[in-house]
Image (cartoon, rainbow, N blue to C red; front, top):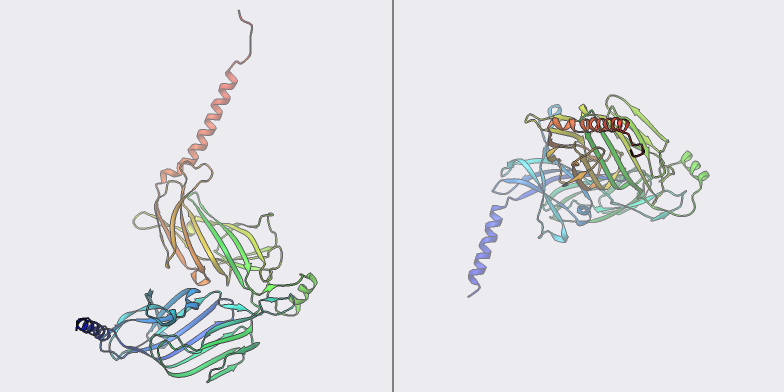
Length: 462
């Protein structure tokens, strides 16, 4: 009798939660997994229906712990209009506390533009990118062997909702598929594997599958990238990118043979790579490429009105487990990237991320070195990053330069979007360095005049 009021209160709270929570089910789901590069891209299309009595303002997405750990970016959008007039409107996505989700699944909520009323349907399209999800097997290969990898996923879509019908397509990089898990109905056509369609799957259904296939694409991973963007109001922006790069594919075993390497490059694909392509902004100048030894001359620069491409070759080809450290630097016109806001603030508009194509960056640090005398710096980045301020000292500096430091892990090419750094600057500070130079020359001239007119000879006393 003592616990009866507590039980009644619990039942009432549960009934109230159920009645206030909208009931959503997925009428159809299509998932396309692109494994043609070391970076895994997944395109998910969900047609959802609100079967409850109350409106639904968001749609939940579920990820297993293995995917949530390597989730680099998550985007969602909805289509408006029909056929040629169709436009895709981005939707905001945020993480949700998922303590009650089974097997440690993590939930993310897609905020709908307008609440979904009872009986209404809508279609949500999702793109998410995964890194370090392809496991080389065998883990070690010789110079002449091809590289094979494992990919692990589920034949059914992990979702907190019931799914009426679903299909998964897996696109591999080549037709050489050693093996894959079969869960009927399963079909394979060339480099594409199809799982489904499956009907009436319960929430959080999970059916593990493994695909073992050939992937000789270079697994380029930048373990650490430090980018320095130095702003000078005298007309230029200097960029310095410091790379610590490695080949994250199957480890190389045996002895390296230059003759065998040339033969392999001529007659077939190789998991190694000897050049990289960096996409730089247009109108670059004073480009250099060097490492600890000195300048590296094996590079080619192509410039046009829309972009600049820098093709670089490390001092040696990179096989699995091999590393390289180098620096790329260049200058840019100030007027292309520095602007003034309506409230009088200056702001830098530059691209975030790594300029190397199809590259994963484990740890990226962007340092925006502002001119001396800058105050109140703020950064506007379209995704979460860690921000802090520090001081940088350069030539002829008196009090140092305020530096905005942005840090982010697990960076992919989809992060190469513009960001802004705002700051206040008084133009009088532009005269500081010229006045220091003029003062130094003037003092040196006065010292020379004084030295000439001084008599330092030792004479006899009278």
